[in-house]
Length: 161
Image (cartoon, rainbow, N blue to C red):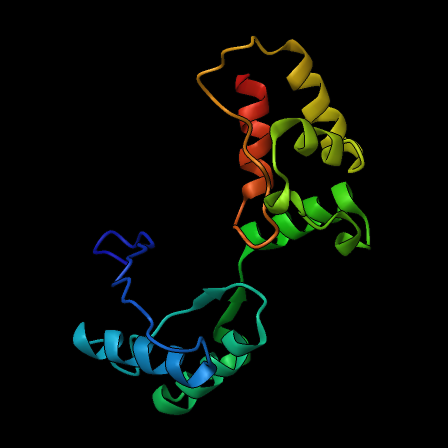
């Protein structure tokens, strides 16, 4: 909180994590960052992370170092939860059935044929392809399962086109 009693958020750093994203590596980098900024046991706040198990154990490691209850200080990222919920609505329970195999396709026609098999996303791509001019400065964005918000980016580009 600041002097006026208003809650303040600060990003202390975005250090590169070398090696595996294990709980030990994550907690070591976070502890080092907190130490560099003079954050002590009394000043440690809350940790907002996605739902990965290694994040749970990383906060448990930090709780041991800084003496707090991990279950009280470990928060789930609301945006990540909403993103997962939206993907569940779009793809259903069997997300693997819609695996992105576009990377191995040779040309755009084959790509579009492949996407027609992918339910609502395929229909959206077909509509866009049918109304686009032959020369388009912007291309469709292909959603990739492992890229954060790639489905949102694909929909946003669809609206632009």
